[in-house]
Amino acid sequence: MSGAVAFVFPGQGSQKVGMGKAWADAFPESRAAFDEADSVLPGLTELCWEGPAEDLQLTANTQPAILATSVAIYRAVSTRLAVPVLVAGHSLGEYSALVASGALAFGDALRLVRRRGELMQEAVPVGEGAMAAILGLDSATVEALAAEASDGDHHCSVANYNEPRQTVVAGHRQAVERAAELAKERGARRALILPVSAPFHSPLMEPARIGLAPLLEETRFEELQMPVVSNVDARPLTAGQEARTALVRQVDSPVRWVESVEWMAGDGGVGTFVEVGPGAVLSGLIRRITPDARAASLAQPDKLAELMESQSEVTE
Image 1 (cartoon, rainbow, N blue to C red):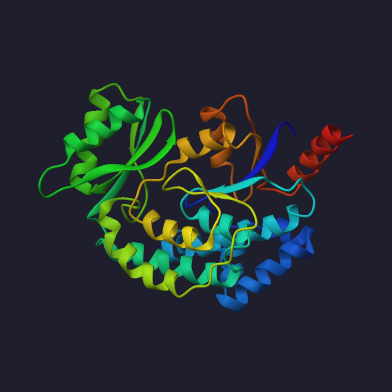
Image 2: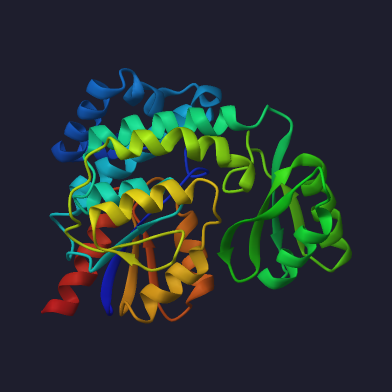
């Protein structure tokens, strides 16, 4: 592996029925993590491994399911790969990163993200909000067309800066649909309404932020054993209180993933990004943000052996 290593943890959209089972079958640490998750949220392992898919897609289930799977994989890889200098997570994945950093207990994180998912779903009535991915335009252009699509009653703004030419907008459905049409007129390669149930990371999530804040305040946060690069500021967190505040602000603020990866690859000195969780969404984004870095995903255990071998080649 080249350069320092960072572990990154995925958010919603990476879920699939069966996730994490191969890890639990292969590693006792992963099995123990799923057992611990079930002691906090009974039935979560069965949902991850057996579905049904429609239940797994419900936000209040998706969030703890991805967290449990990511932590289960992390428990197996953390003793077998080089210790990362930094960790980060995309939206929900920031909770997984804080568990990995030692700032947040696994059980507390599971309870928090279950409630986070419920609050996000409750913040906007189903059907009133929407999100759209705009591909092929730079983020400044997308910011401008989101503002143009908004009016006094309907809001649209950037929710995720995913990669240089993939930006997600969120808000009231009418404004988001208008933004998608404007994007097509301005030459976007695609403007796709996403199959999500709420306008995440938009100002419409303010009720969710207000509801989550007291729960975060009463949750114990330890000092971080390794820095976590926050979604909100794209800079490393090093203190427990900082992490708590960042999670509150994160709910209705955009995910600044491009800047986060650029900071890690630049000031953070990271040359290898290891995606720890189901899927390979972040690895793809990272390759487009910083092509000179190496990005590898660990959705399946066989990928671990490849990474361990490449690591030993560097250290020998």
